[in-house]
Length: 597
Image (cartoon, rainbow, N blue to C red; front, top):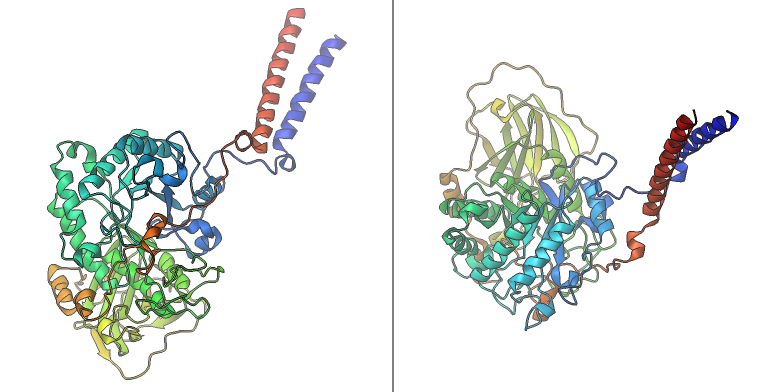
């Protein structure tokens, strides 16, 4: 009897020790959950507003409020030695998993033909479809559950091999075959994954008088008898649009009309890159002359204007290119980053914070141009953000009809102050546009102002006309920065019938007539495009650098037994083994005890 009690006591002691081992935080401090899903609840970022390459500084990306990011997966880096070679990625898993844990969605671009897959040995060459399909299937499988959106190649519309922006030697027909194969392989891994057309520049064709690449590509797609049954082999359209906020709206309108003409009007449009990189930064000067003059304050103003116009034009998502500057800078290429190479913030960083904070949750957007003033209204489910800026060089006093009797006035650096309405109007001073490239090429407006009110845009008290009058008084571009809260909703009588401005064809026609394309404005001077073909390279960079279209590959540790059997995995295997052993041993003791009785 004593012996049986000893067995039972021993079993209870072992079980008790096991529970202590499993529950003691001090004994598992280095253990990590091997699942890519984060344990802690990540911050809530609006997924519509992104930054390219946030993995270089995730903490600052969190501070900026970036909801999505884009990374390049280079085929020639992942499989450098042959079809049986496989490196994890040129963005290591720990960096990628940190982005996901932060609550940011990762979008991947697949690009770069490996030298072994082509006779020319260049990354721009057409790959054999069987090798391409195998690569796409394998990488989609590797990142299933972590990456949902896949962009097939980058800027295939840049056709000049001498251009540093050139990434694709094939025709539109060749790209379509690449897209179709990639789509089918990705969907075979997970039908919920989304396949995007390559990011297009738009201006490469428009500046040369060619039919838009998207239109030519869609002609090929809709003619394919297999396309309709396969969602036309793509889920979204992607564009890279730079420098001119007003042209962004025009281009998006034209892209939507191209989709509509092919019966594909429901496809979403993403802006995967936008920026107006500064040519003047005393803390990080250029290594050579810039082709376009942009000040730091103009870049900051551009961020808010471009994101507002992109929303007004129907873009589903928009990303700023990029998080941080490279150093040293490529010769004569403007540094693009929200952060300098030393991680110090540029003014555009605060402007992005304004966007991610005060544009978040927008459900409906409308816009209106009144003379030199642009007004974008964002309906944010119970709160309204109205974005205003002046495109003339002369400062302007603007009167905005109210929704609520009080509001918060915010500048592009996030400085806030409470303002009160007078006679149903807010009077706002709008700075003039700096026009650093001269009055004929004044494509970025003055520092914008945001009015944040409680209530819906439908409640706006309309008094016609909305007034915008020039004033000779110099306008302060900064405001006091005390903390201000949105005033509580005040009950008001039912408003009279309201007017919601929308981008009608008449307004677009007037806008196009009043604001001709920058190419037309600069026919006698350097071309200023609304979209830069390549965000990382300059026109003066040698053509040999084509293969480095994306950021330089990050060194990757090889996959070995050591990387698979990590200490934390061994620890958990030990715990699981101990549990199995203890439970099975206890069952044996109980059975033996019952049989003895």
